[in-house]
Image (cartoon, rainbow, N blue to C red; front, side):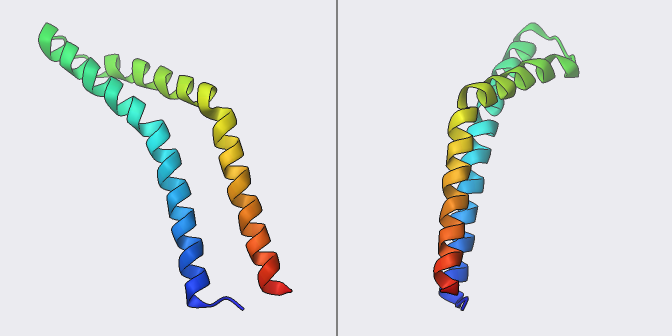
Length: 90
C-alpha cells in the first residue's frame, strides 16, 4: 500500500534526480553564456546568435562526456523504483 511517507520519498528521490541532471547540463551552458556575453560586451558585438552556438556545443559535449554516467544514474534510479514498487506489492 502506498502510504504518504512512501509517496513523499518517491517524489523527493525523483526531484533529486531531475535537479542533478538539469544542473549537470545547464550549468556549463550558463557559464559559457556569461563568458560569451562578457566578450560581446567588451567588443561591442551585439549579435544574438553568437552566444547560441558555443552554448549548444557545450551542452552536446557535456552529454557526450557524461552520457554514460547519466544513463547509469537513471538506470539505478529506475531499478530502485521498481524494487520499491515490488516490495510494496509482496
